[in-house]
Image (cartoon, rainbow, N blue to C red; front, side):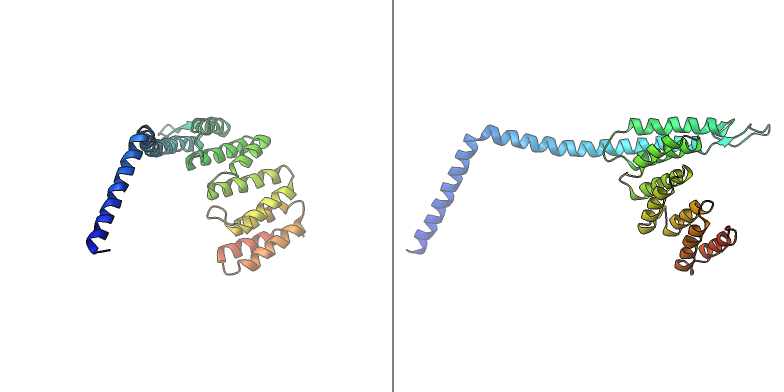
Length: 241
C-alpha cells in the first residue's frame, strides 16, 4: 500500500469518527445539554456555598466577640470618676447568665457542619458559664459535647474543663481518664504539664499520696523547664504527708 493510500485511509477514518460524534451528539443532544447545565449549577453552588460559609463564619466571629466582651465585663458599681468602657454588671452571676444566653444563641444560630471555630468556642464558653453559675450537670453535658468538636485546640480546652467538673463532682476516675488523654495528646491550649498538674491537684485533698506520685512524675519529666519545676516543688512542699 503506497503512502497516498495510507494517508487517504487516515483521512477517511478521521472523517468517519467525526460523523459518529456528530450523530451521537444529535441523538443525545438533550442529555448532553442537561449534564452541562448540571455541571455549571454544581460549580456555581460550590462557589456560592463557600461565599455563604465564609460570610457565616465572619458573622459568627463578630457575635462571639460581643459574647466574650460580656463574659469579661466589669463587675461592680462604676466609680463616680467613670468606670472601664464596655458592659458592666452588678454581680458576677448576672454577668455569666447574660454571657450564657449570648453563647447559647450563637450555637443555636449557626447550624453548619462542621461548625465554624467561633461556634465551637461559644459552645465551650457556654459550658464554662454553666460551671461558674454552679450548674455542674449542665456544664458536664455542654462540655462533653464541646470536647467532641472538630477543632483539636477547642476540644482539648473543653475536655480539660470537663475533667475539672468531673473532679469537682467527686468522679475522680473519669476525670483521671480525661487528664491522661490530654497528657498523652497535648495541644497548644492544654500542654502535657498542664494536664498532669491538674490531675495531681485533683487528688491533693482526697489522695495526697497519689497526688505526690503525679507531682514527682512531672518534676522528673520537666526538670529542664524551670517554671514548671519550681511550681511542682512548691506543690510538693505544701502537700499533706
